[in-house]
Length: 239
Ligand code: 1GP
Image (cartoon, rainbow, N blue to C red; front, side, top):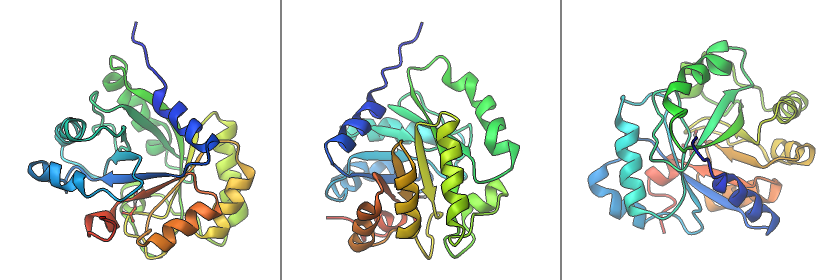
């Protein structure tokens, strides 16, 4: 019998209760140079609390290699944020068990999840059920292309709030509002604040956040955890 600790999720809950905002840097395994891991991780933005690992399309086996190196160089929790069932590594601390609940494609609502079970069931990975909501970030993003689902328009706030609540009512432990990697426009503060006001579970926001001002605005609107990928890769968020 495998024991799953639940430490990552309880840590998130504790931080929120203590009014601490959380920051995850997203590592795309295909773009991460393991030879430079020490240097890259030495440049994490101030206040980084988590490392997320994932990409829309990743070469098979690459995630495991990258996660092992990240664990070697960093004490931070490493959480899988997989684009598909091949991006699962037992060396990570936790897995965002994502369902793309803004879309209606069964492949990303349940098929990928069923296919991942063989890879998860004999590991001690902490599994965190997460409702993943794709929102229009002003340009076609990889999630849109790969999942073949249409992002929700930023103007349709009621539908976004209802989708987040449907996720909570279905037992998700986190909701992730995603504008897409490299989005032109991040999720608006209006959306973040309305979703946050309706939800009782933690809220993650990512996609297109490129400056400290945007990060601060997302926190002030109610994001509990913000994810930064492209801006960190481009050196905008290094300290
Ligand atoms: C993408 O939300 C993340 O899944 C991060 O997006 O690369 O735009 O920071 P960026």
